[in-house]
Length: 206
Image (cartoon, rainbow, N blue to C red; front, side, top):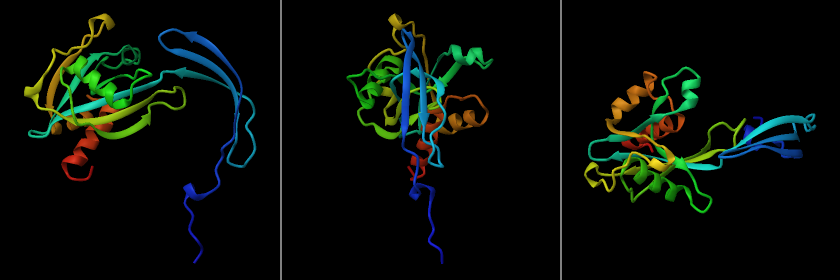
């Protein structure tokens, strides 16, 4: 029998040449124009390619849930990008925020949980660290789930006024949240990932 190989065992491209990099925007976010070449699967280098890179940095998100009732806490706020695409711009999401350079994902998730939802989770379970759109942005988000009790609220939540945040907070049965995904009422990727992970945890597969 011939030896079986998987794609992960085969030789793979590794060479990347960044020929130039130009900063186009340097405000709340950064936007760079890169001229680069990369190794193709046949071993040759691509021609020089111009690419725009949106520098977003890391972020963290956490799905807060009550393990006694299997309910989940979701937040809702205005998202201008969804409005520009013609979707309902008030999206249901997990708690999330941009990670400060000196922080790690867990500390960012705990800080955002207090600011946005009013809860301070002690135990965080790491779900995944994923790129949201690796073809265009450097943003990577560290995702967690964390048990909390609805009676243990430590702050008002709702976001920070100085950041012009206006955040609604609500508890949903996990089954209803998953149904909202199927109905297209939850369309935020990080939220879908965490809800599906929590569903696996509920059935002992997470």
